[in-house]
Image (tube, rainbow, N blue to C red; front, side):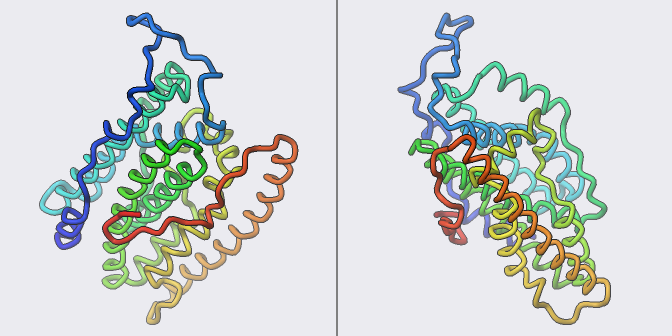
Length: 310
């Protein structure tokens, strides 16, 4: 833990949210400053991209609950506590930057956004992880999924400012994923059966932490339809690379519990592929009914180095 923390602190760059915001294009809103009320036609973002940015922001907003959950499970002493606080400080930048961008660009209704934030953060987030290994497995998968969500949102956005910002955030998430992934690799070496069983439980029941956001399902459908984040992205760009890095599917020496867990993972990947193919046919019909602008394919992935840079 201490070694990985030292590596992370050496690799994580300083960056400043204010530098990524187009302040010169911002205007006052109505209210105490007597600015211009927000109107839907002021947003230049495609609906699915605005949905993705909103979901990403509201997810980041719930950081107090995530901090509590991780601190409770990891502890606040020594390297564990130092990591939890550092991770929280880095994640907190993301919400500040995304909200400032959305406001400066008048990309979403600021009143509706604030009401959603109040409702979502007031609800909070509670994990149902059965053990420390389950909690560690979850954050390992979740950080990679979050990286892909931010990265693909930027690829889908015609605004180069948004692309710069989401690339920067995704690089942070990549470093967080590397930290947790390598910590989980050590867990697999220490307790192969227990670690693989916990990973199988998490993978087979995985949900992003933002599923309680108001209107999540409708937004998630639009986001999936344009390829920002869907079952195929989750399988090909999150689960498969992670399993390769951890060596789970090719590891020898597992006991019967570990072998059964690995079989569950394999069956789940097959089920995801079937569901993804079925969803793609649905999305094709949706695009025919309401053609959307062409978006870059998630297959044209940005690669990230171990320092988190693109």
